[in-house]
Length: 46
Image (cartoon, rainbow, N blue to C red):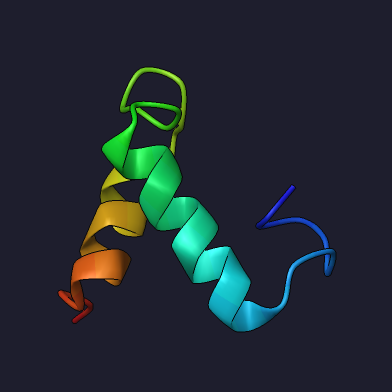
């Protein structure tokens, strides 16, 4: 929902994604873009 809609303001979306990563809501088995999300949150984008 965060990725596919405009229901969240940009700054709120980042906090929501961070929470989901830290609490295991998003994981490599359930999210095909997991690695890209983690790298983007860490600022490791090439």
